[in-house]
Length: 194
Image (tube, rainbow, N blue to C red):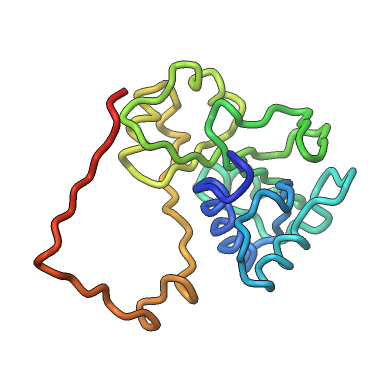
C-alpha cells in the first residue's frame, strides 16, 4: 500500500483486493495495520488469510493469469506459472527487487504493475525514473493517464483501471435511499494556497 493506517490508499487497495480475489489467487504483503478498523469481520479475516507468510517467495498456485491488456496476455500465453505483483503506491515507492518490505522477496515477479492515484495535473519529475521499475502502470482516470504520459511514463504502458467499488454492500443503489437535497442550504468550499 502507499500508506498504512486508515487512508485513502488503504481503502483503494482493500477494494482492489476484494475485487480481484473472486477471480484470481491473490496474496498481499501489507500488514494488518494497513487496513481501516471497523471492516466487517469476514473482510478482516479474508485479508488476514491473504497475507504472504514469512519467507514465502512466490504464489503456490496462482490460478488464471491476470490479463489486463494484450501485452500481458501475450507475455503469459505460453507460461504455466504466473507471478504478477501489483504495487499500490505512488511511483516514487514502486518496488525494486530484491524487495525489502514487511517481507523480503529475492526474485522479481514475471510482471510488475504500479497502481497509483494522484490528484494533480503534473507529476513530480523524480517519478519518471521509477516508471522503468514496473511493466505497466494502472491509474483510475484518463485525466491521470495524460498527466503520467506528460510526466515521462510511456503512454502505451499506462492503463486506465477504474476504482474498485463494493457495489454489493456499501454502494448498492438498491439498498440505499437517495440523498435528499435542500434548496435552502449554501455550500462553500475552501482550500489553502500553496
